[in-house]
Image 1 (cartoon, rainbow, N blue to C red):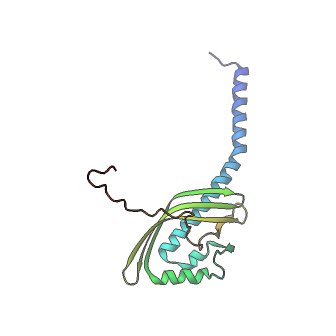
Image 2 (tube, rainbow, N blue to C red):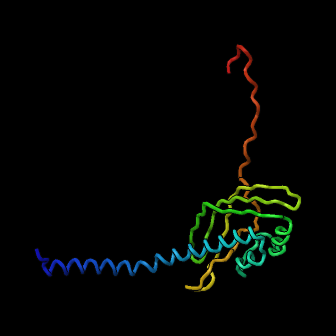
Image 3 (cartoon, rainbow, N blue to C red):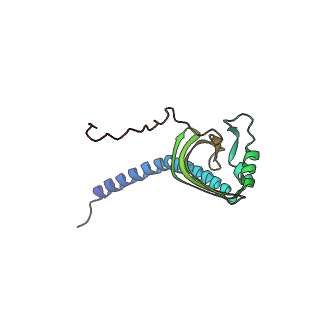
Length: 176
C-alpha cells in the first residue's frame, strides 16, 4: 500500500527535528568528553613519567601557576632526588573519579606504587591521590595541567582511631 505524502512529510519532519536537536547537543557533549580525554591524557602521562623516572616529562605536566602546598618547594629537584634514589618505580592508577568545576578538574584516584631502591629494598604503597588540574589554552589546543595537590602532606584523620583495650575473659562462674 503506498504511503501518503502527508504521513511521509510528518515522519521526515520529526526525523529532521531529532537530527537538528542532536546536532545542537553534540558540541556540548563532546566538550565534556574532550575535557575528560585531556585530563586522562595528563594523568596517563604522569604515570608514564613516574615509571620511566623521566623528570623532564614529569615537569611538563605542571602549569606555571602551580600552587605548592609546601612553601619554597623545588618540585623538579625533589622529583629528581626521588628518581635518583629508586632503582625502579612502578606506579599504576585506577578508579579515577573526575569532576569539572569551570576551568578546573578535581581528580580522586586510587593508586598502587612499588619502588625498589638502590639497595634492593622493595616498598609497596596503596593509596589515594587527590589533586586539581587546570585547563590551559583554548579548544582544540587546550590541555589540563596540574594546579595543586601533589606535594601536600598525607591527609590526617580528624578523629584518632580508637585504641583497642584488652578485656579480661570472665572467670568461670562470673557473668560476661
